[in-house]
Length: 170
Image 1 (cartoon, one colour):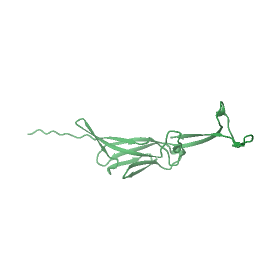
Image 2 (cartoon, helix red, strand yellow; image 1 turned 30 degrees about the vertical axis):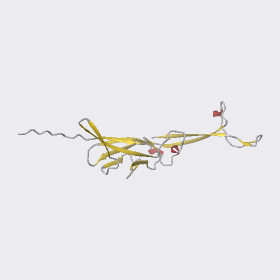
Image 3 (cartoon, rainbow, N blue to C red; image 1 turned 90 degrees about the vertical axis):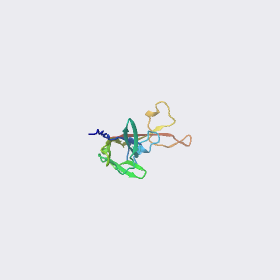
Image 4 (cartoon, rainbow, N blue to C red; image 1 turned 120 degrees about the vertical axis):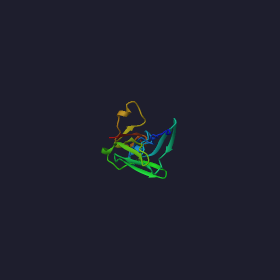
């Protein structure tokens, strides 16, 4: 009788890459603020399978592969699979539906799978203040209620508009 070696191949690891870990709904004012960290209304998802053979790791891009199955178990995200890739956006929701969305990726040809959380946020409070301008010590404590002409100079009074947003995620 002969000797037979059987090598069972291990299942590949799954790697997920998101272009943005926090999403806000389309039209949310926080995505329009040029002076704060950018909050995105959509993100691109990249999906890879990592195979290890004889200590070498090879990486297979599965983003556009039809065998890649992506779902959102929290029902907070729209998932769009196109020829360019996989794109995520926030479903129309009320602030009460913000929080963590759980993205699940599995495949029809291997048992490997992976989940990843994405934060879904939304602006819940927008507050504006008119402050005197130019700024002087204590001006941040003063409020301007009307903008009018300065009688002696025939010029308009200058004000500083302060916009504060409260963005919540659950």
